Image (cartoon, rainbow, N blue to C red; front, side, top):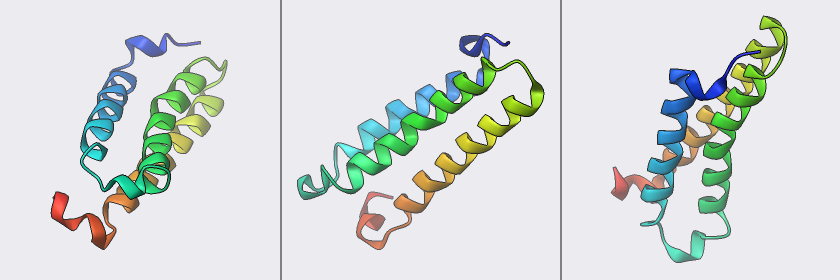
Length: 89
C-alpha cells in the first residue's frame, strides 16, 4: 500500500482537476449538465483512480488503476478537442 497523498502524480492530478473546474466555468451555461459535468467527472476520476490504485496491495493492481486514470485523462483531452471549445484555447 502506498500513501497516495505523497505521490507527485496524485498531487499534480488534483491540481489538474482544479484547473479543469476553473476553465469550465467559462463554458456556455447550456453545457452545465452536459459536457461540463462530463468533463469534470472525468477529470475528478483521475486522482480518484490513482488513490484507489495506491491503496491496493500489488503493483499489478496499482498499474490497472493508473491505466484507468490515463483513460480518464484521454477522455478529458478528447472533450477539449471539440470544435465548439476552440475559442477557449
